[in-house]
Amino acid sequence: MLTVIYVYEPATLTIETRDPRDEHATIRRYDGRTPAREIRALREGPSMAFEPGVYAVLSRKALQIDWTQGRVETATLTKDDWPDPPSLQAGASKEQLRTFFASLEKGGDVDDVPQ
Image (cartoon, rainbow, N blue to C red; front, side, top):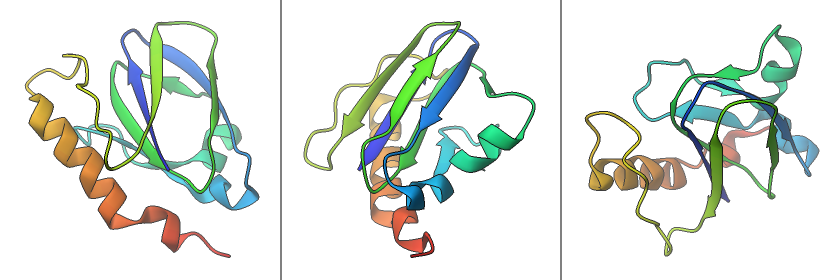
């Protein structure tokens, strides 16, 4: 399943997994300005801060995402149900964001997670 995280203001996120294998799931930012990070690495570092932007993570099961500051929206997407994303990412069209989401679904990061 693909979870999209829209961060409107700098935010500190907590991401909980329901499947232990999803600890290796990778969070990616649309524009690539922030390096991709595994969910488990977020817990190991000093900060789970996210700058405004569009992020996505492919996982086996639904993720629990909470935040303590900032303004954030999350959505769980299926490949047949792409919503119109908010105009959050400067210079990105709705079609470009949909292509980003589709490439993650097609790329199958979740299949690369150790069993």
